Image (tube, one colour):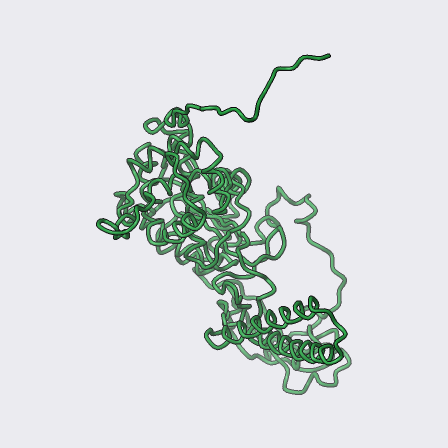
Length: 505
């Protein structure tokens, strides 16, 4: 018969653990432990407690911050999972000195950091500067769109939400009627009756919630003053189109220094479009640099790169005001680049001709007018009409001229259009920031500077999303989401201190 070593589950074992030895120098957990104790000012959080003479002793904010930083560095962001790690993981036990805060304490602490998170970020940024991790010559901006704890089904314009509320009320009436009929006939068991009652109450609550939202809020509009979809669960979030599909979430922005990919400012935005994000990000970065001892004009003359999503007049004006050496290409810059002429997605697509083009209209130089294929005269309507970033000369027919035209389908672009207009492209206004940027980005120097953006900012988001496993925000509301986003960016910067610094490892 085979022999095995004996064992007994009833025996008691005493395991001796030296907590400090679980935090070896050079590790991320050691850096978190040291930085929180010696470099981060938590006086703002400590001042909230009023239990000097009475009340139960509270968990030290430093212990809670250490636990959360370590948890986020390992992709653990749910408070119940963090609580479990404090009970089972020896590294968490070492950082918390054996204390095990419950999940509600952890969640409340994260939510309470809305005012202090920027100061903590600035403290770590100051350490990066002491360790000479900031180059201060070139910066790159990009964003990461992530879903939040809000349902896409609870999104819609005010008209759509009003319709949804009406449909819910109708469904409730039908269920009540059905429930009463079954109750009279006594042809259903108690369990089904209870389930129907719960369903009716659930639909009523949802209808009341939509009604309350419509009463207390105003429609959201975009930069063109068009209404966009609101969200009842988290109205500060927005529906965004990403490479992973349409999400209801936030756009985490990060401005990154090129030397060691240190993040100099981070903020979660409730807008998916990046056309207005340069202004708040540059202003936030200036405030951070001023807080760690730099001058107000720190970014003046520095190189700044961003992708095509940031190509807008608003963003370029901010770059001009800050005297940034900006490189922000337009959406068509690859099509103009001869290096991409053989790539399929940048080749001009041959479309079947459906509508008349400018060459189908006859120009009369004497009267400064055009004659359409149907014989109607298009006279001058505007000599300098600005559409988006270009200037056009506009011609149009008289009212009703297109109503019975046999070429209507080929001439008008939409079936509901009433009149034909011709816009003659006059180019961009002299001194246009858009035109200057297009000329700048098309130069060999511009292309070379812009290409460096990939090496500066993309590794940051790869680290946060892939290595730290941040695939969604678990809280609601911009302030709380901003806390989570900043914590991940702080962890990223601490890793840079561990990998490239010399004094804190």
